Image (cartoon, rainbow, N blue to C red):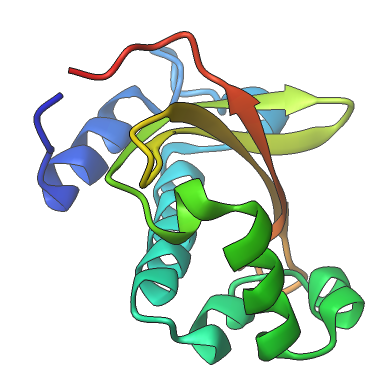
Length: 146
């Protein structure tokens, strides 16, 4: 699958992020929200690639930060259980869904082993309006890589 330039992808997200009538999508998520969520996830993945635990940890919600206490513990968990997002070969943002009141961003990721997964990111808007990552679940993907 060809890589899409980040700016082109953001433009695409802005074009398809809201319904044709201008209403917000699932969970009241607007095109601007989708772009902001994508930016947070992309920046965390970039921090993982650089092994910048402090930056990666900063994109997590306060609850996640309390749970793991330090960037070092957080990064250890990511290295051990989340190799596809820790060292992805390919990242493609998909749809935003709402499940049980939670807003989730689906991201197609090909891990370092070449196996595709769907990283289902639970996103939480903070009181200051900023989106943070409240969790990530890796699901088997039926997509096949080229």
